[in-house]
Image 1 (cartoon, helix red, strand yellow):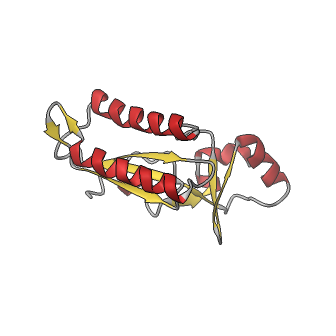
Image 2: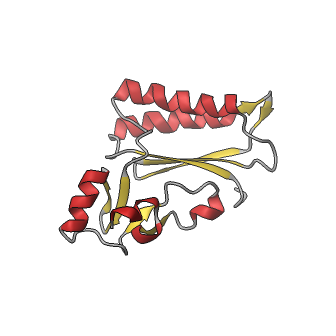
Length: 152
């Protein structure tokens, strides 16, 4: 994908089950292959990471995503979430990287983890606010450089 592609990050507090993950991948494959804006096919892709993080990207240099087309992706994830009791839209979660994967914290839990020395400014977190693939970089950044730095 073009590094300037627009992206949306969706994170879950815990990974999906194998069955749920397979279902989501099937849904995303079908959705991306038919995703359109004003009748024009979007140059879109997705990445499903660790059964917990979904990144959707659109190369708007080819065709811009419209409000209606973006709403379709949101509704798709809302429907999946309602069916499986998961929430892709909790923007207050902080996903910290560990040797074994990721631990997701609410802001209250993050404050406690910082106070207890489990998490610090150098702890890598998912870059959940990047607007483009280029801006997302490797996908993580130090907590001190993220939106959640205010909790340090």
